[in-house]
Amino acid sequence: MKLLVVLSRVPYPLEKGDKLRAYHLVTRLARHHRICLFCLTDQRIDPAHIAHLREHCERIEVVYLPRWRILASLATTVFTRLPFQVAYFHHSTAQRAIDRVIASFAPDHVLCQLVRTTEYVRHRYDLPKTLDYMDTLSKGLERRIENAGFWLRPLMRIETRRLITYENLMLDLFDGHAIISAQDRELLYHPMRDQVKVIPNGVDTGFFSPRAATRTHDLLFTGNMNYPPNIDSVLYLVHRVLPLVRRERPDTSLLISGVDPTPRVRELAKDDPLITVSGRVPDIRDAYAAATVFAAPMQIGTGLQNKLLEAMAMRMPCVTSALANNAVGAVPGESILIGGTPEEYAAHIVRLLGDEPERARIAENGFRFVRENFDWERNAEALDRLIGAAHPPAAP
Image (cartoon, rainbow, N blue to C red; front, side, top):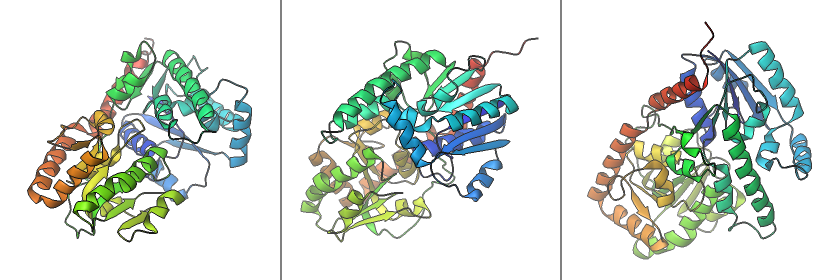
């Protein structure tokens, strides 16, 4: 089958969750299908990254969207019903490009990742289409409203309503649908949401595996550090949890590692010599190996936290929220520890830092759980079956 895959970012390198999911699923689908990768970007791309993707894809089209063009599109979106997140990525230049690709490549099926990309093919009723929602964008935005500035809240409420309507419409217009977790599927508002197939992420256990290293920090938080749910989580950890931990263990240190830390995140290390904000690191496994306990008290957001899967695969004991674990499904108290208040998070962290056998027990159970339940090969096969089911058989 000739498969056109439409992405809102170039899926390499793997520093963001949507890129990670797209890369692992697409490279596996490429073993059985002829892939044309159509990607959007608002920044210049390293040719070496494209060369790497060409090892898997028959054809790659990357459309560069200048920031001024994006801003102009957003300005006109105020007078439409299109979600701003969709308008950010939808432009006439890219539409003409994808129309040319469809004409020349003649795909048998189209796979879109996130509703951000669906506007490009929503009216192509002649093409079977599958949408990977990934997570429920409308709910993720809704959860951020309370913590937003007062002047942003009305706009975010409008965007939430637009996203709900648009997500529902795409469920009607696309033939196949996937999402990252059962929790996210339940957050869709469509009455036929049960038709959406849950296809979780995997974890590359060959890459993320236990390694011996010198521990330089007690706690670790990783992630894309300009992503609002990650910023919210690390601020919660530093301002509300860490002071309680330090009542028992005054020298507790924290490593915050991940791409694009905002000024607000960088400032956390300015007045605290025990906090390190590393920014992008050449190999994120070094960050996991450098810390004793992984702490991710996620308060908002949706989707599946890859950071938890990676930490567990590297045999780290993890402390997180019920919100984050609902998508993972680990057994609380066995494979993972769950907090609900700053006091609960602090108690878990203090206990793990002071009890090596308990750290080993949680880490080993989490390690086994991830290896048994999160496999990219199995999940790519599920997506392949979904595409096949949504694609009508050829006429005899």
